[in-house]
Length: 62
Image 1 (cartoon, rainbow, N blue to C red):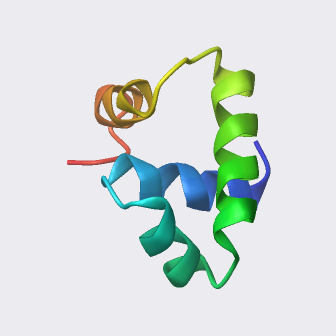
Image 2: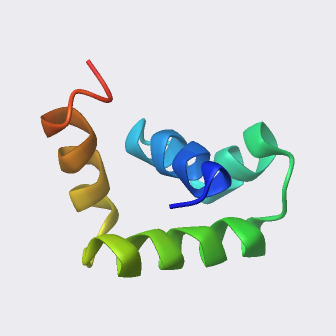
Image 3: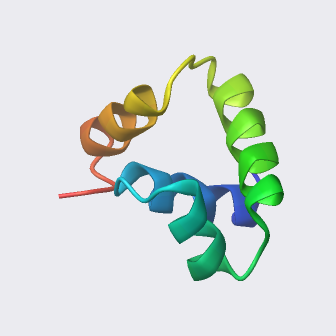
């Protein structure tokens, strides 16, 4: 993942909405959706819930 994708990954893992992620990362919602799609594909995931679970299991969130 790119550094921007890692940033979006962590924001999504914290449960932020696309709108909140866009605001926090200073990007548009469509860009958030593009990043999330890329993240899901790269990790072989099908849902945001898997992002959250992976972040906790990997120790990225406490």
